[in-house]
Structures are given as C-alpha cells and as structure tokens.
Length: 72
Image 1 (cartoon, helix red, strand yellow):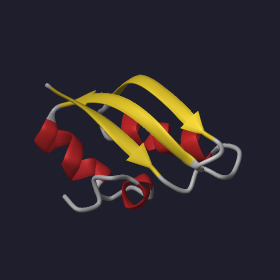
Image 2 (cartoon, helix red, strand yellow):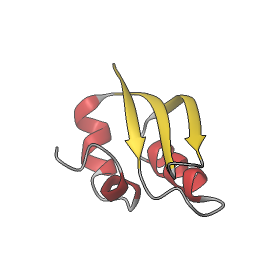
Image 3 (cartoon, helix red, strand yellow):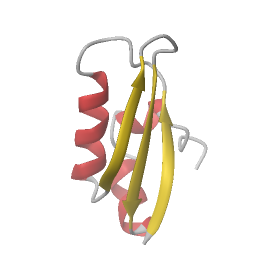
C-alpha cells in the first residue's frame, strides 16, 4: 500500500472537494485525511492505495486533472 498526500487546486466551489474525494474512493483509494484551504482554493488529501490499481482508474477521473499527480 502506498500512502501519499495529494494536493488539489480549483476548490473554490461548494462540493469541489467532495467530488475529488468521491473520485479517489471510486478509484480504490482510502481517504485518511482531508483539509480544504478556502483562501488558496486548494485542498490537501492523505490517501492510501494500491499504486497500479489506483492510478489506472484515477487517471481517468476529472479529479486527476486538478491533482498534483497529473504529471504521473
């Protein structure tokens, strides 16, 4: 299992973080912690996942493009 802190941009609307968390869970990730920074319109999410399995699914979500993993 891999544990990583993901940073998401574009958290300016109500529900943005919830959508990102849903995409993480649908991709097989387990959310351990999440915190939104309304001033910076960003969020920090600690997630645990099986790397190959998670990335294969997460890369096809809308949340992926707003995460720091989009350089993967």
